Length: 341
Image 1 (cartoon, rainbow, N blue to C red):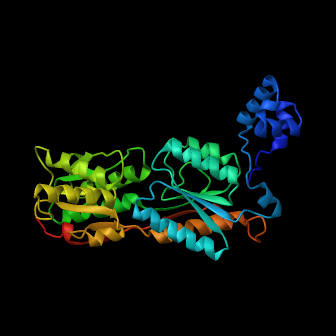
Image 2 (tube, rainbow, N blue to C red; image 1 turned 45 degrees about the horizontal axis):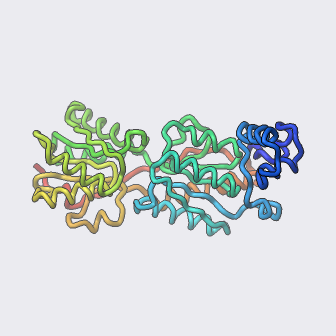
Image 3 (cartoon, rainbow, N blue to C red; image 1 turned 90 degrees about the horizontal axis):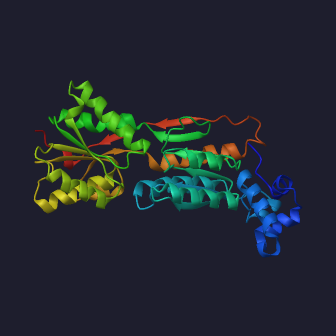
């Protein structure tokens, strides 16, 4: 694990005393503008972040683990948080839960907050598809584990579900029910999960001897119920409406279901619907929702355990090895897709 940048490093690079750096940070009006600019330049170059928890760190290691998810309004991430909190509590730690709201900018802000607080480590479901936020955070030397995301191109641990397999499960089920034209209500195209589920859907079509033109994608800017209702309205406006729809998560599927109900379209008689995540509301919907279940609580707990293992590696008898854990999804069939055509 690399060392965090400290105030002494900033002072050395800027060619000033530690006291001058402290004044620039805490009392900038007491420092000449030229010196202030030189110190700020060194801070920017080194990526120095002031530690608000310095006193705690002098007494011992931080007892806080950070958790940054895409959307705390999604029950799936609530379950991930439950699993992480349970594992952290068993280890005597607390969890600071933050919500990026699928915004790379908000993600960057929260990662800076975690660095400032010098948390023990971070569980992260990335919102930034470019990876720039992860690269910027990595230089602080704080361990992190990717959650609901495969650690492609990184050396860190990750815990995810095989979303390609999950997408295939959903569409294979629809094909087996006789559907030959399927809509995919996706989501922000930058999210790996959205792309992987689409890949799985296309794989299922190919296995059945059907071409990619049998999948009609309806992208959405967000992964919530309102976006699902909007996608449902677009679906209703298609000249040749698919007979089934696969949604990238259950919130989108519930929105599509609402749109169909409002328009008098019968589910599943006129349109079959399959969601993803199997949140609690899926089974409780007006038409119980078929969904691809992800073991969200297990995912959160495993990610926290990997992070704890890494942070304790310095005193452990066996060195920590980064691991990529991929869990398998499960199709849960309910009324929304049951009637064959």
